[in-house]
Figure: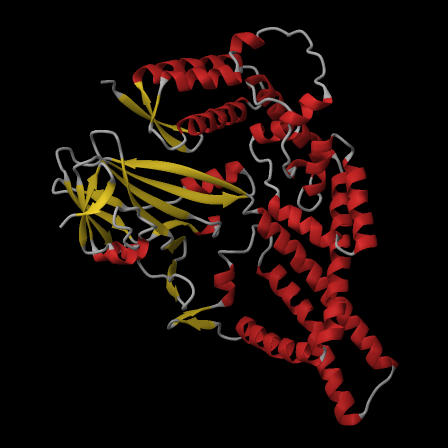
Length: 512
């Protein structure tokens, strides 16, 4: 019977036997020495670890939990040994078109994207200039009218090339150590060149102008179709926003909160409240002025070039506001582009086989409390203090483990504009977990993170791993947080609270 060692690899937890751990440690150390003088060494190593984690997950495929020496050897064989790259290797012949196409996969290319990276992804797959693909999309849209719809369908259906392995597969290259290293080095060089290249700024402006033209055309079409209904709705909507902005705020579930304070945890950095309210006011100028002019025309039969000039100016201001909102929305969406997790392992007392899990109230001093609920979505609670954001985005699960001892793990997840930003946000998430010698496990009902981090999908997944023969009593307080806990009776999460559950060979079963 071999001893197992737990490691965090690529943001995922793996259990390795002693021999596998020794081989993997030696391999990673050899890579680290080989990359000692390489720019972006840490990024290369992080991507290598992520690729090894992918290979482990593929080989185990949910059928086992312990990584063996064979798994490590397979990963090393796929990536290659550092000694293979000690010198310049002979130049290999170019692959044939059939061989190249067989290895390629279709992804969206975020490195060369103008909007969603669809065209650049197709250009990489077919090995053609991206300008040609973009021209074809534009021509298809002009002559068929379905270009925009097709683009968004492909955007939704095509995965994005995030990891170096995916970017290499997009270009028809194997995800070896040398290729990953070259990919990261090229990314560093591209970042440096883009900082100095003003052409990218002109591209962004042209893209924003094109998006603004499309939005303008759509709005004009809807304006002709909806007419007065749009004016009335815009008037009441604008009045509500203005009251919320310049009034005393809003009240949600008995809690008083200014709209500005609520927006503070969502708006991207660099886009303050002044930007948001300016864009909102400009968007509302057109509908409000149109409503006023319509009222004057109906009441006093007034109509003339002055009215048309005022209306044209108001519509131009609204278009500017829509463009500003589009820029804000694009930036906001980009901060949810990447996702990262950080795994925490909590120590449990030894010699205990009967456990009790209780959700404890997280102590919070002061702050504004918010509670949202409706018939279609789960309830959610927020507490905003001067420095922290408290949120009940917690999922609880109970799973089997093949180890002799139980373990309690919680994984913090967050999103960001880059993997590093997402990892930093995930690492900043704080969550309270306590246990004692009686087997009582107290877990907090709220996670919290620094307010300047803003809300970028911060959540916590708490998993209790039980060996066969161990049991857990799920207190009724855990019911709102249970997340599709698998059990032999197929009982819903809402009916699992207040009962004792025994881990058997077949899975979690109700203890009667």
